[in-house]
Image (cartoon, rainbow, N blue to C red; front, side):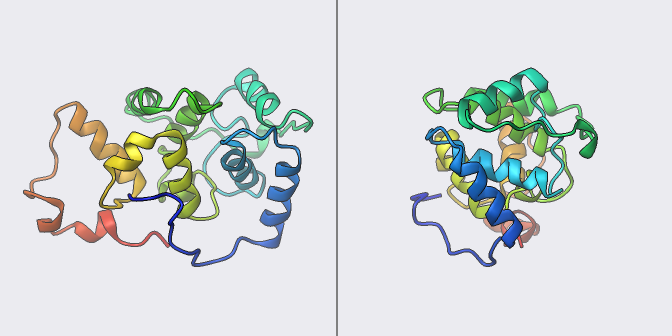
Length: 196
């Protein structure tokens, strides 16, 4: 993936409502490396973007602990009825396990972010959309921060959800791609095309 600080410029700007909510959340941030990513995730949920439930897929107690760690001066009690829980597919546990194993324990909240991303993978859109993030850029920054080995392994900049599923299959020795390489595959653009 290269240097995460050298990301492509944004192709669009977040809405004023998203910018204001993000600024409000960051004003209450504890100063940990994952605060900004979590502010984007919570902001997306609050604006009705993505598939994450009110507790981001963590459960009420774990979500409350996450908020206390990252936004200690903020009182946040989202209504659970505002976002239904996504249907957890059979591979959910395997994805959550893969992400948990790859999470950098030095990053506060990394185990929670692994579970949140696995929950987002249950949606039908691009992963950044299913997580309610403003663009793929924020997802790439989040993965580079929390899952540096996965970020480095995605050297071809494959779409993140496709990459995670491919990685899961590779580790289980399940090979569904019949092409000898991604470059020779007829479906190359499905995996590597821009995510707009």
